Each structure stands twice: as C-alpha cells, then as structure tokens.
Image 1 (cartoon, rainbow over the protein chains, first blue to last red):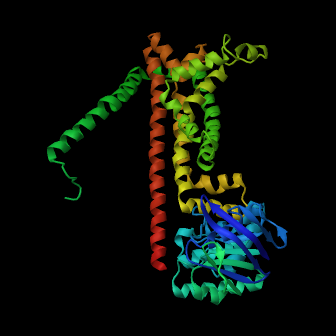
Image 2 (tube, each protein chain N blue to C red; image 1 turned 90 degrees about the vertical axis):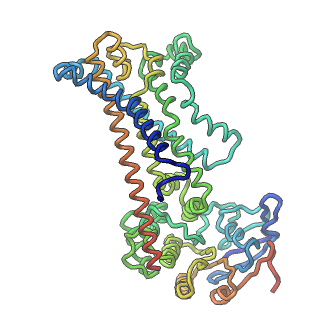
Length: 213
Length: 293
C-alpha cells in the first residue's frame, strides 16, 4: 500500500506539488495522469525516494517512509528511458539488485534465468542492452526492477517510446505479472486510454494538485 | 572535393604539412634517435656493464618501487576526488576542481622545495618527525611525496570531465538512480556502475601517472639528496652518470627510460584503438537492433 499525505514539493520558486494526498490500495494499480509539468513524475520520484518532499508524509506498506533511502523502500522502479546498465549483459542487469544484496552468484544466475523466462526473453541473457529492441529493453527493465521481489512497482511512462502492438503486448504482460505477484503499482502516463486500460484507479494531476473527477 | 576545407589551397597544405613534419622530426624523432643511437654505439659490452652495475640496479629498483606506491595511491585518490567533485555540490568545489590541475602549472622544483620546507630537518614538521625516528627528506618518503604531488592531475583530471558529463546527461543520472532504487550504496554504485563506464579514461590516466612517476626529475632532485644506491632514481642516475662523463652508461639508462615512454605511447594508442572499436561495436549493435525492432 502507498499512502501520500499532503505532499508538497517546490523547486526554487515553483510549487510542483501542492498538498497532494493519495492512497494506492495493496495489490492494485493506480495511474497518474496529467499533462507534462503537472508534477506526476515528481510525485512518483518522491514515492521512490529519488526526491524528498518539502512537506507531507509518505507511508509504504503501513510504515513511515518519507526519509528512507530508495534502496530500503521495497520498491521496483522502471525508468522512462529504461536506464539499463549499458556495460552489463541482460542477465547481469536483471541480477544487479541481488548482487547488491550479496546473493551468491549461482543463485543470481538462476534468478536471472527465471526472470528471463517470465518476461519471455529466454536465451537473451548474454546479450548487451544495445543489442535489444525497445520492447525487449523495457522487459529487461521490468525484470530487473522485479528481481529483488519488491512489494511496490513504480513506472514512469513505461510504454511511451514503443509502438502500438508492442505496447499492448507489454501492457498485458505487466498486468499478469502484477496480479500473480500481488504487487501494488503506481504508474505515470499522459495517455488516457492507457490509464483506463491498465489501472484500477486513475488520478489526474493538474498543476501540482489532484483534479476532482 | 570533400576532403578539402574552405580557404585551403595546395600551397598552404604543402607548407603546413612540411612544417608539421619538420617540427615533429626535429623536436621528437631526432632526439629520441640520438639517445638510442648513442646507447647502441657504446656497444653490447658497455650496455651490459651499464645495466649490471649495482648503482643502476638500485636506481631501477627505487624507480619501480616509487611507481608501485604512487600509481595505486593516486589512482584511488584520483577516482575518489573526481567522483566527489563531480557528484556533490559544496562551497569551494570550483576552487578545489581547479586546484587538481595545479601541479601541471607549478614547476616541480617548487613541489620539492615545499616538501623540504615542511619535512626537512629545519622545516615545520621535520624536528617532530625526527624525534619519532621518521625520515622524509633524503629518503624514500620524500621522493614518494614529491611524485604523488606531480602526478595528482592525471587520474583525477582525466576522470573529472568524464564524470561531470555523466552527471549532466539524463542517461547517466538515470543509471545512478536505477542503481539506487535497486539498493546500491555509494560504493557499489561507484565500483559497479560508474567506473566501468569510464574505464578507458581511467586506464589512460593510470598510464600517464605511471609514465610521469617513472620519469619525474625536478621535484625528486630537490628531496633526493642523491645518496648513491639509496635515493637515486633512474632519471637522477642518468644525470649523475652524464655529469661524470660516463656517456655510454648515461645513454644506456636514458634509452631504457625512453623505451618505457615509447611503451606508454604504444599502450595509449592501443587503448584508444580498443575504445574506438568498442564504441563502433556498440553503435553497430544499436543500429542492427533498431533495424530488428
């Protein structure tokens, strides 16, 4: 569960988020919809711990998390540009979070292979990210975020750069994974259809406030 | 003609090329050739004698020891300094960043004098250290300190622009953030995510640090005291031999130093070639996958 309570964030003189309160129930998907500059990505980054709010509190799974570092929030984050580690193979990318946690090499490789199957990229483990298509990179980014078994999945414009068919395929894959793993998910999009198609709850942000439906 | 620039005539091209070849020939190739020529002219017996003298052995050993201490230390410090300067914003950051390049613009003799002034028997800290039985000047620590000073800019200076560019690029920042969300601490981020991305620049800086550590003369000359067989490095040994008119031995050792320099240049060229090949491979892979997508 994600609970945001009167979150405010300013960059210099601009107020990007103005007292936003929001709850994402456990095991559901919420879409953050809004035009660019509405503060939706900042809100997502605050949940991830990549930004700190100036006021307000954040609770994850019932625990106060406003000032926890990103690595201790039990989150998986999928970046808009995928942000794969270009010098690591696909398998190494997926296993990175486990390596950080000190998981032995054999167990890491096993986990990477399992995730490659789950996102249907069997056999692509030894490739470099630069040798994959956009849709495949997105799947690797998703597998990397989920391999550390987070409770919460955060996605920033996850399908923005992909064409229509790949997008719909990935949408289905994401929905299936989210259901089977019981994940709480929050994703940012500017596409209304996508928000409706994927999310249990759609929240629209406008100039740093939640727009009333 | 695609390879002809605007305003470039055949005459201008001929003059510029001749000038460049003359300059390189006169200032670089000829002196090197003379060093190797003189060493070779001394004959194999003289070369063997020059290389097998105990003083030459001691000089070579000391030089390698200094390099073995200085190169890892300045590599580690250079990485940390560059990362700190590129990653964090703090007052005095700009001043510190330009200070990193200071040893390039200060004469090495000044570095040597500073060490003497600080740690010499008449210096600020010298008497205190002498009481503890620690000797800096006219001993290995002084030589190491001087060499550390003159080689500071190589690793730190070659990494800082790379790391700053990385910090300003969205892709670089997102990689760091991805590592953070996956639980990586600062160290893991540095060693596993950041350093592999700038490894060519790092290798380059290490190479130059090594070359300079082996070749440094001015700063080391001030603190060495020239105790034969103890504090004489290879460049100092060359000077000693030269001043004693032992030219075959001087040129033989000089040729060894020059050969090390040529090796450095060769390694540097090989590194650059590998880097270009790696970049091309990356681009090729990216373009084929874009095609496949």
